[in-house]
Image (cartoon, rainbow, N blue to C red; front, side, top):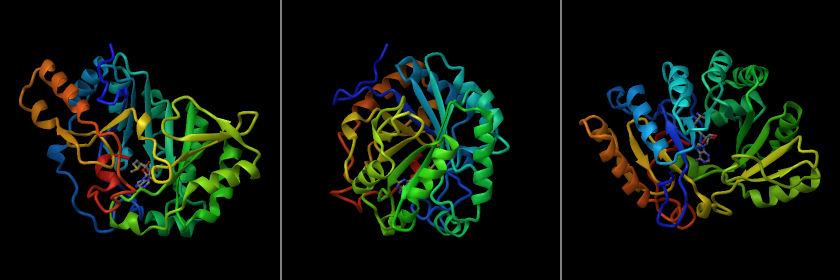
Length: 324
Ligand code: SAM
């Protein structure tokens, strides 16, 4: 059964689940230094609540789930949670987004718990630049996390690089690093998700795409579960690079996802305010039927598109709050 179809005919089959809004980094485009407005632990959905809710989503046709945050590896026993969620009938893809600072010691257990694919944030290969952009001197830990994850044998590891004026001169170096290790590279345009992000030097990825196409002899390609990114790859299929271009070329018409925050708020769009609070329902003894009815009504609220270009100052949420 697939009941999660919105007013614009889009089939919603993908949920990004933020398991914490806390993070050990302070990336300049994400959580501002000194940010204190974190959710109370009492408000975090428990593992039992999450398992029930995701199970109901799956009954309605949800197929893919990504654990994210904040930094998901900071949530205690996230491996246990992954194991419970990956066992839900109907869900056929469990993935995780991480900054990889804690990945080296959790990679094997995550794989055993059913996480098949990883997205790892890496904005620079220069230690001093990582400290400046990401707020902490963590490059060595991140590279070690990636080394262990690669050895563990995940189906796919993607590297998320947010492209800014501050690191644009490193795009070729990142292509070379990903080619060497068999990682898929994804270049992301900075979204105006708060004052700090708005101050970052925005880089339009359209010309970058054409430069990489020429320099590395790349052709248009697609990859399974590629989502909103447009991909280029080598003819032998050994390297791919994706471009996530919410600003220069938005992809809302094919959006198939919604996001759930750690405190149980379902956001229909990263760049809009449409939301439904599910925690009160879960904690007041609502029946499965009531929750299912609420989920269906929520999907009806999904807006047609974000307005990052038309109203860049509109949004008040930071990425760690919604779940990137
Ligand atoms: N901590 C995890 C990580 O690093 O992947 C998961 C959460 S993080 C918010 C998810 C992704 O969102 C990261 O790749 C990060 O670079 C990206 N991100 C955060 N703020 C952004 C912004 N303003 N524009 C574009 N990407 C952003």
